[in-house]
Image (tube, rainbow, N blue to C red; front, top):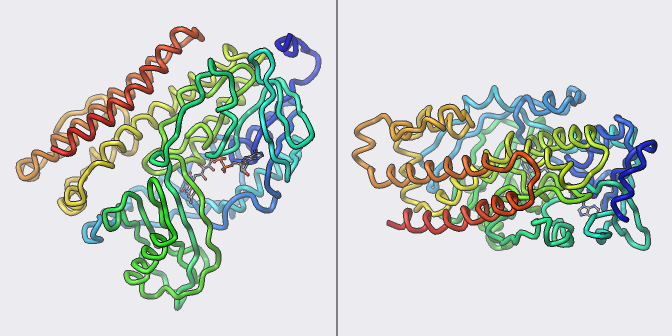
Length: 454
Ligand SMILES: Cc1cc2nc3c(=O)[nH]c(=O)nc-3n(C[C@H](O)[C@H](O)[C@H](O)COP(=O)(O)OP(=O)(O)OC[C@H]3O[C@@H](n4cnc5c(N)ncnc54)[C@H](O)[C@@H]3O)c2cc1C
């Protein structure tokens, strides 16, 4: 019986991790330190992990994850200016500065991979091809000609994970993805004519194409960090056109590039099921980044900490034992990610003129910012006056304010639906919840189309 493998109480449990992403490395380090027999298989070379730039994280991210990093891994967050589609209206991010840090992605990856390799077997340049499934349990993986068996397989293989589709159908993990659920990203460092400090600007939906771009100073260098991200697709022509437009707005940029990297960020709502018998999913492969503004490092580390706790508290890794990972993750963070996703469905349908008005009218007040910053007490008491307290603004664009109200109310309803996830593992109840969870998105897409096109 495949399930007999859970009864070897005397031996340390074997954990196999696919992918040296943030969640995979963190789990390898933490579980290895707690005495588990951990093996991590990574397709790339160790020196290829991470990215040669800084990314934003909440300042408490690493403290919450009990990670002590070398001092130079994080630096203070840059102040960004958010610009509307024409580049006229703008919202300054100054108030967020104290809440965030910029983290050096190479140094973070190096630190985590070093910590992981002290406590776990980290094997680089080894691509996992498929899961091994026995009697409906995931029991191992095949990588080339080798098979690796374990009590639990953690899938941390990123957005292109093909493993969820290999799981038994009753795991409820074979969710279909479209390119609309992805942001295709291009990032480069472009040399400046001098090392003089320049303003850092983020362009929302430039030229009406769904996505964002930015040009900000790269820390401690005479380069600018330039990003082009588009939903659905990103052609070479679009990249060239957008870089030319950015150069016009930032004339100090030269033609010299330090590197060019393309990658994909998931914008799908969080996967409804992240556990099955002998299998758990984490990070981008479970769509953990916030569907409006990223934050995949923070959300993945929060999930990883929950997963480590659940693994440590259990001796067997059947779905019912792993259920607390799913439940606590959804309660702690999944419902906020779902809320964000539902809101994004509406924002994606907004016209350029309306978006421009939002940027230029001054409608974005403290209440809206606190909703965006997840101050949920305020969200649950949401009133129309939370959108605007200005009677003049309200009167001038009542049509648009009504639409925003529908969007926020729908997103709050979705958040409450996530809260109905069964507390105890009960497959029939979970099946029903998962159906409702997916259907709510389909219905919201239709509502958003109808409401925003009025
Ligand atoms: C341009 C860009 C900007 C971003 N900005 C931010 C930001 O500002 N803040 C933030 O918090 N997050 C940001 N993110 C998101 C963040 O990087 C991720 O959400 C986070 O790192 C979690 O990713 P992951 O570890 O799940 O996946 P990944 O980092 O993709 O790791 C997956 C790993 O699995 C390996 N792998 C894949 N398949 C196999 C296989 N078959 N066998 C073996 N190994 C395999 C891959 O080689 C890779 O190392 C950004 C991402 C990008 C691309």
